[in-house]
Amino acid sequence: MDKKVLVAGGAGYIGSHTCMKLSESGYTPIVFDNLTNGHEEFVRWGLLERGDIRDPQRLAEVIAAHKPLAILHFAALIEVGDSVTNPLAFYENNVIGSLNLLQAAIKGGVNHVVFSSTCATYGLPETETLDETHSQKPINPYGRTKWIVEQAIRDYSDLLGLRAVMLRYFNAAGADFEGRIGEWHQPETHAIPIAIEAALGRRRDFKIFGTDYPTRDGTCVRDYIHVLDLADAHVRAVDYLLAGGKTEAINLGTGVGTTVKELLDTIRTVSGRAFPVEESARRPGDSTLLVADNKKAAALLGWAPRYGIEDIVRSAWNWHTKHNASH
Ligand code: UDP
Image 1 (cartoon, helix red, strand yellow):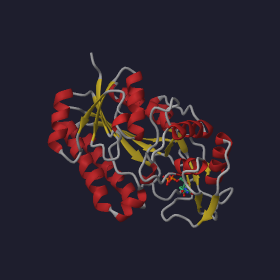
Image 2: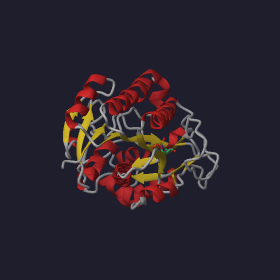
Image 3: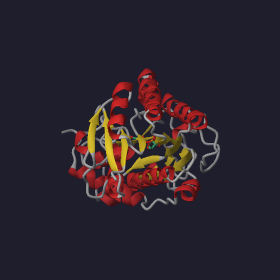
Image 4: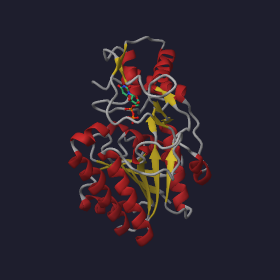
């Protein structure tokens, strides 16, 4: 039997890599995407159903047509800075759209959901590494929209029989090693693609946002996780739900922190290129240090990250050299 799963936002960065892994694992991904930020050429593992999660009727139609075993929900606006300047769009897409999707799932008899959440739901870290019991006090509208949906999922699980895995990503990075799909945001705000574009001469320089943080070299520490490790965890989350697993929030990170300066060193080593780096002011809203405690993912999903920062940078470099986002 065809093991169909609906992938909302499957034409985007993490969604498309997950479709690849789902397909390799015997699932048939059906991509539901409005292509606002997604890319039609990223839909290579399954068919595309064009639609918007803000459109309940279209959601109901697609769910009725395919009767998926589970829904994976990646469709969201993700730029923290945009969420501060345009909170309406974030609440409309990330909250109203997600509630539409959850309602359509329940009404359509699909009780298994994998939801893309984020370490941004934690807010300012109170401990060296963050586990899932860390307090959740998001400090920007983006984090709050994801937190609100987590609460709805818990209520729907308790009251309506939904079972869901809420995956709290740390810093997704890297790309398919064959360079077919990769990180392609417009405009780009993330550290790795920006530094690679600087190394490729497509940008004038890389600006380090703050060198006065209380860390080993003064720059922010992040837990960069390879997008293929994320994708693998999503497939495991679907398997877990189909085997009867109950609703849980699970961190996805490597447990290893990298400073911005260490990241730049890795990019210089992997690319063999030097590029201008400017030390500039802190970016408002940045946490000093965000590193995952990933024990729960190991325990519940049998998951462990396979790739480190060098693999991440090598695969991202490969993708960006092949792909010029400005075309
Ligand atoms: N960063 C930077 N310069 C840039 C973009 C990012 O110094 O042009 C830093 C940023 O302050 C943070 C880290 O790189 O400490 C990762 O930022 P990114 O935007 O990739 O992810 P975030 O952690 O904000 O989700």
